[in-house]
Amino acid sequence: MNKQLVFLCSEKLGHLFSLAGFKQMVAGDPLNAQKIIDELTKDETIGVIFFEETLFDQLDEKYKHFLERRWNGVVAKIPSPTLISEESYLLKLINRALGYQIKIV
Image (cartoon, rainbow, N blue to C red; front, side, top):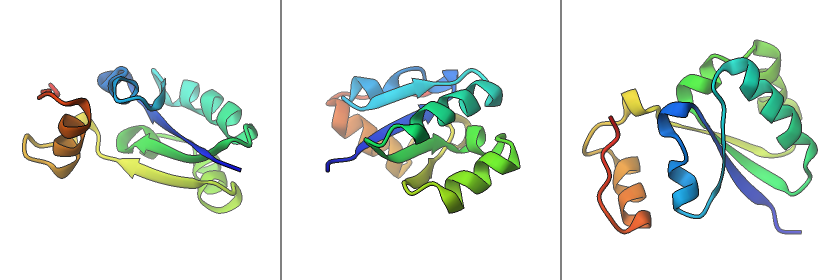
């Protein structure tokens, strides 16, 4: 069975990853993120969730524990916009995937 990957980001990143063709969910705050996590982890087609780092860090400890130890998918963190420098590797990958230069402010 093929598994999907999803990006769960704050409003700062908007729908940046969906522009590159990925499924992306936008959470305005940690409480909203926890509701989205409940939905995503029940979906057996989801295999990887990429979290914006600051959003993941704000989650309740029980959600972090569940995601890291009990959920059978993979969890990965991506740098938040405030942590992304102009020359960062992630920004270069995004620019290459989109085919044009972007600037995250």
